[in-house]
Length: 283
Length: 125
Image (cartoon, rainbow over all chains, first blue to last red; front, side):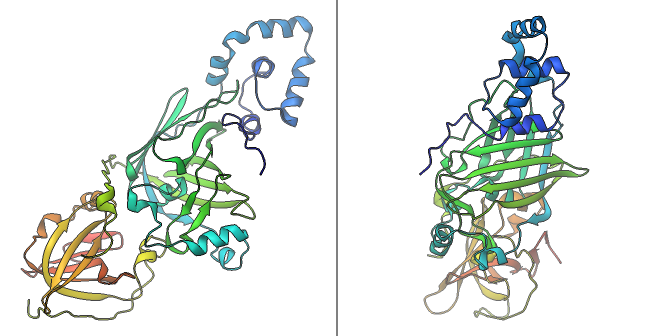
């Protein structure tokens, strides 16, 4: 089994940051890249080489400023305003069910896990546990509240009263990803902005299920699952696109998309109690 | 209520909510009606439920699942109209578990119809 990357290393982060092209003028970018302790990549190497081509005194001056560069870099990109309350709209894009039936999507292990899924006992919701972030976004009729500051994005989900505080990676390097106590199947997340999109990178998942809904019930996740959530604000709400990468379960990336509409509904307490949620049969 | 007997009817309905978790637990291609006495009313998240005991010998209890209380509140559904001890007739989707169903509409003892199907819940459809 391949060695798992450290929790704070996110190989997509460098590309994610360099793609949006809003990091500021050349001296700011060089300041960042000269001082950054980020995973090396082709893009990163090219940037570093360009910066090192600057005149020596300029480089020395820039390096001397790196003590406070991270705050500067964090403030430079313009973050899209995603704040507000949202509720799921009609659109749920799940791909084609034929992908499952034809065995196109799932590995042998993914198919085995799905075949073993028993809706009468295995749905984590019976214990007030949301199976996955995809399951959380999938849930209808509940409010999600988004707020942002310079260092974090906070997503408060009415469903199961989830309070998800996600640290923003800066161009100085990734920060420790955060999970939610008591919910190991939701992994640990870190986020950054890619132009007008908030990107949430989550890994360190416990084994569980991506979906417990409809024909997708029993779609599994392994400890090697990694998800990329991309939140983009449109005219009337948010689009959430989630890419699932799990070589144990999926033969290729599995993408689902949800649309949420802006709402005046307030966030309500959910107050799920396992002894009540588990009542599924008459006495 | 004219008849207190258990009535099972079969109707074909559309595929509304086909992507909802309801599809895993309930047969949305049919509807059944259960008549009896309401014995328990529990408004909760993620699902509320009612219990109805039919008047056959020994009484048969049905568990009627309902939407989340938060959803009911937002829709101003009249949850306080359901009173334990009163007679009720409930129509809904039969569950894959025995003696379970999902609420679509009910007729209360005073004749009021309370409908909650798909995105709308109201006293009358």
